Length: 474
Ligand SMILES: [Ca+2]
Figure 1 (cartoon, rainbow, N blue to C red):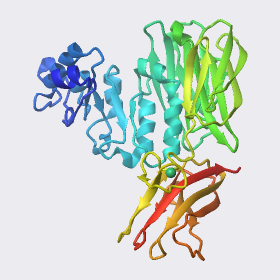
Figure 2: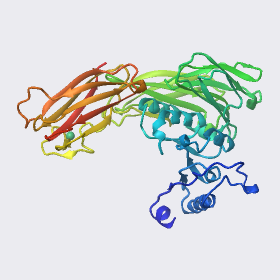
Figure 3: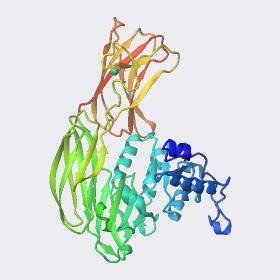
Figure 4: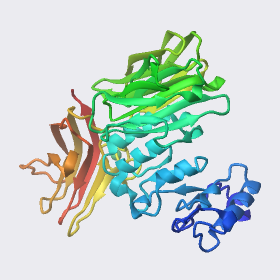
């Protein structure tokens, strides 16, 4: 504690192996059942957490596993759930106050999207490794940002108080009934796009008080529904979007009674931002809404929100040299933030490339010497399904003895792939010069992820690449 926390300000240590032991019969410490805690993990977690908090008020302990008693003191990582060590849903239901992480570590990246969906359903934190269905994972994580406070401060109730008969749709319930809040959040996953799956939500917690009912979905919409209650259940239908959330609110804390979000899509010459607002208060309000885009300039609109009302609108923001953040401001504060990913990060290799005095752009290039066997560099491409693109780059090679080319790899469901090749000129004569490489291609409509690979494999040559430019044509 003296060294790591007080001197080096490391306030979130990760304890390897801690909490990974098997589940016990009853987790009842008073009867001597500590959930088969081995090696004094429970005592160690308690001691570390307590002494850490004395050293730093921000101290938090992170354990590799999520042993019930350990995760009273340490945030538990549940990305090992595929080993069958833990039932995440049982743990969340029994201990809604424990903070759990689920995602990609310890092999969880093999089923990354599935783990992220479980984290969304269970109100767990994301342990992110960008593998597999990268676009869907980014969409999921960004969608939940607006709901984070409601999800994190609610108690997980699994499927208690829900009526849902369609097994293709998953939904869980979270109740927030303290701290000036009275609300129910239902998180739903509907990957098959089932239409109109009936959902019943018990609303006894509202004790007959009026409440607002809002459907939110990952494609960017907020929709108010009339709370039609029969037999103690609000009757509605899960939307066909992959991810959605139903939020029922009778009371919201003062600084949380306006919910907002922004969903971004890149267009050829602009960033399309769809903004939404939900008024979680039973009073009308006039709001000045401001959206600041990647070019630094923004747009302001005045909005009238009815009691428990919603607002949806699309904005076309200019693309600029900025960092890609889009921020939604309302009532004098930042209400939501999202990020427009660059088509390709570090396209001139100035961050991670090799210094070259004659680089065509900047000071660094992507440099490959001769090598037997595979040699290449991959980077994520942020393509939109169905979009048409032009990719251009500068390349230089000392000769032709090698597999020297670039490739756009576009992934589709079930491991299918499509490719676009980026080739050096066949009739190249001057091997000292930088030459122009280019390709036009169209992304498939069911694209799940994409990357740019530049190669110099099985090669006797030295090859450099630089100044990659990716442009969305339509
Ligand atoms: Ca460069």
